[in-house]
Length: 305
Image (cartoon, rainbow, N blue to C red):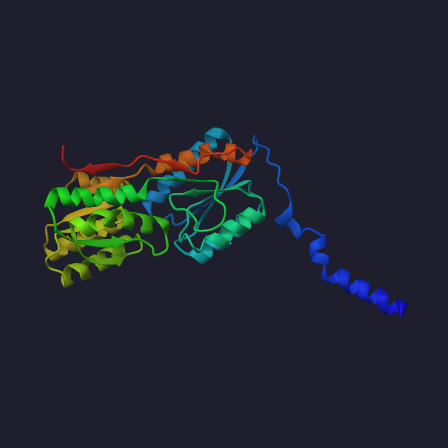
């Protein structure tokens, strides 16, 4: 009987072992030396000039502040991004800067960082779940509305418009679309909308198909400049002179507006977004409260002088 009792107690201890001891780093308290900070940065893709500029803003400000930076390129793959974030956590970074490929898919990785007591700062796009200390971004909804207003000003009520959407699931895709449709659905005639994943080549292919199927289209709103530049080539091939509005204000987009190839772009300031994200790092690492949104101003850029 005594042997059975000992065996029973040992079994209970074995089964409850996970509650008696913290499971590795996941439950440890973290103390950060604000004079010696390493940040992990997960960028959705460095194949897009906009995010290259964001990265440049991060690295320049980090160097200025004496902060070490580890950067991972998710290559527009949400599974790779989750793995990248896990790797950065395992490397013991003090703060994570995350620019999600997909706002829903990144949620589990954000929660993993939360469990590891590593603060997360979102860049340009937020996460649907998990705790994010702040989002550094432009007002995507306002930008989408600005694009619709520009088309309305140029063409008037009920102009026939197509929309090229970004990566499905990205908060920027959702928010830019919501802003655009808040005005376009009542004032314009949106005859077609399709995803082109924020990609120039896909923007070209999708725009070609859209223009072939809808010969009456007068304008295209593309949710980033890369897709807009693809649409420019599609319109040129189709022999159509239509209004094309992009979003971001990357170098190629601004040049296209300046030369008249593109009608307008809703310009963000990507390098400033990266800079502001790093500026908030030391406060976040020290556990200070910061604003939930750090906005970066947008502006409408047209070829008009």
